[in-house]
Image (cartoon, rainbow, N blue to C red; front, top):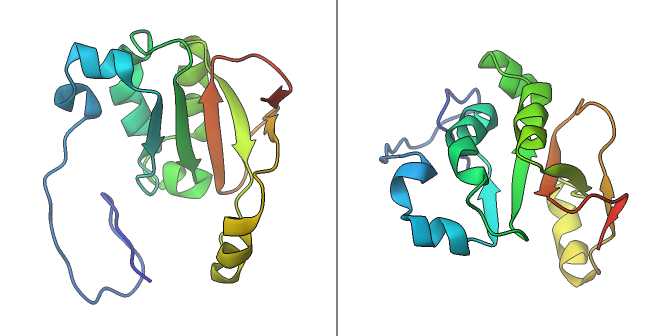
Length: 144
């Protein structure tokens, strides 16, 4: 198993490689922003910073655009961020959170590949544990 992060990693490190990183807003032109259907954010605790950097583009995305974010409240707190602030940023742009079921144990992956995706239910309340969220402009209890 490997790991990657833009913040200090607390596990064992066998090799270290630094790569350049830039905010998505600086990498895409206007047409690419308007055509994006799905954006995935997984930056090991720095999701708050990533979403704030993306905020100026949210209004330019196509109406059916969805953004998937892995949210880990404890890691976010270590960086001075909160899941509540991230949810607020997305809500201000008209996006609603839905929980994407995900069992993080390695043994779950073979079965998950063959299983149909369960319904995505609207998140109501706080994010208290590591969660994968899909943000959509669709306002419903279960995302179609």
